[in-house]
Length: 308
Picture (cartoon, rainbow, N blue to C red):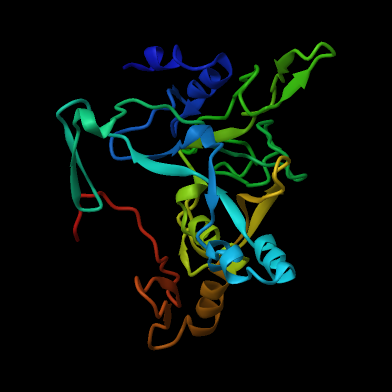
């Protein structure tokens, strides 16, 4: 299936997202996933819920406190419910095969494969001094390659000039007096958007850990998705109350990211002229390099076939 065929199978509001991605040079490209990439597939339209995996939610309150109504009610108030979904893998065309986590997956009719699938991109924007997206020359809060505070695509040479407009999905819905639902027009959704990502937080370690624990927590050091920097995250679960049965439903995570660049700055300042190199390495596996007195970063992009 090509992007045209795929677009014809979705609503106009979703189709507009399919056509909203850009490459590093600002060229419009279809938002299509590739074999080996993961995606979330809802169970029963993401309407089905199940008890969350944390210890409190997994308790059988009626069995534990059958003779004590107060304790049983208190136990049930601590139960959280999670939306049911499963992770799927984009497989190649029929009779093809890919390797995921060192396991070979062969595409067959039983795999319910999807060789072509679109996604709604996560867009990174240039930001002005007020924290609002901008592509107006001279208003970018970051100096940029020309030091003139202009907004460029990731190649550093092509200026961002994005003017997409229309009823994009997730912009919202207006309801008329007669109950007719009309998608809201988004005129500034992609203003200043200099790069597009296929990003789903439900795969990220800070999200999966918070879903499993169902309580606020600090992450271990890890590599940030958007800038390949080392950092840690503080995460807090978000809930809504089901209007029909009053259940406490987990709907997402509020997270705060902290980079570890201050540690590197401290080492460089205090040990720059030392005879030995000073480094801080994570004690637990995979033993990330957190910082060093040489300023060397702990992350480097390499080709998959580069084993050096």
